[in-house]
Image 1 (cartoon, rainbow, N blue to C red):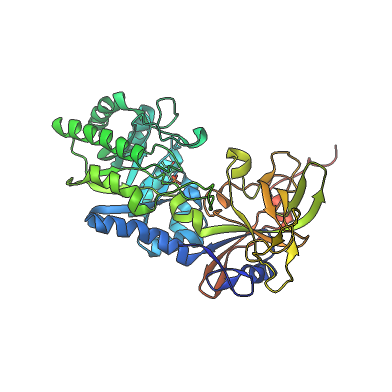
Image 2 (tube, protein in one colour):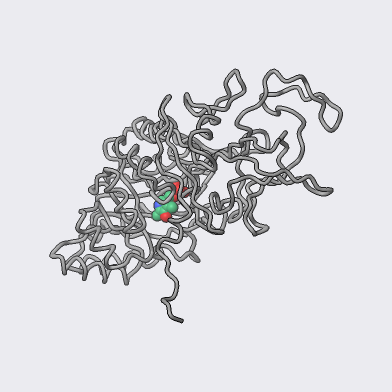
Length: 446
Ligand SMILES: *Cc1c(COP(=O)(O)O)cnc(C)c1O
């Protein structure tokens, strides 16, 4: 489903709420999420799992790191989701949002002992262990608590996910997971450790995967291991195939083609058909990415000889993906004039589609106010802009707010969750005093 629609007045809406109303009430920059879009994305997974007859033995564990706002976690908890966490902080969030700890898997290459203790105390479903050293420390921590820690080994299937190198995680060269060749040895070692209980196996080969084939290939390799383990008497009760399903960031002819959940899961579930193990999934981006946008206001227009700049009030500290991965986000005006007289574009042609254009278009660099040349949100965008206009930066629900910072002492944006005609303030805009409240100057005298 599309997150936004334009009404007859040229106003861009999320569900029943105009973005201009949100800007008026909550200010900008502001992340805007849609409960209906979150629900639809989760339903996409559930429907695909039902269609393949595996819904009963499947658990979708939302990868919290994509967007950790409590309101979002709570929406998924209400839908019955599990959670994939990568820190003790994320565990605390899941618990605060009403998530069920018995549906939590804990991933990550560097879990601390205190994080292990917290997860054991909460009673999580499984630790996704990523190294021999972690097996030993987890065994020790569980022993101290008089518990047996449920574990899975994150195996690195050495499959190329064909995605951006920064978000590719399943190759031999990655810091993640256990080399495929070492997996059997480590499972034997885990079997011999008294305070561990072997539950499963997991993998996660990368993110923003547009082609489902690598995930299916990884699953094939994982199944070979599951069968080899069974032959040694190590029976696994679940197979966790990770997350990674890609989403469409760029619409229109030049855009990427992204699979929906049914298309992405079909080859994977074909590989997993006829098994009796439980199936776990860890989607992050595909559940939230297109359920959110970043609303921003044009502060300054600078028209130069070479380039035109639109300086907006959102920046790389709010949305790092363009600066970090050179990622594309569609950027559209939040409102366009519908009854304005037809204007003539630079080329002399009439601009006749106000729903898209709204006036005379120029080619802009959409940039933030931060002192970095890498602080851009979009290059070469053809838009008709005036200072004060609102822009929606689309597909910003995943790894947007989650990767935000206070760089340049910029308070983090507000976050709202639209639910029908209601707008729920999911996170207040930060205040400047909060940003240095934990700091202190040297005592006097000198
Ligand atoms: C990041 C991550 C995910 C989620 O990846 P998406 O591409 O957002 O679906 C799942 N599992 C693990 C272990 C991760 O690190």
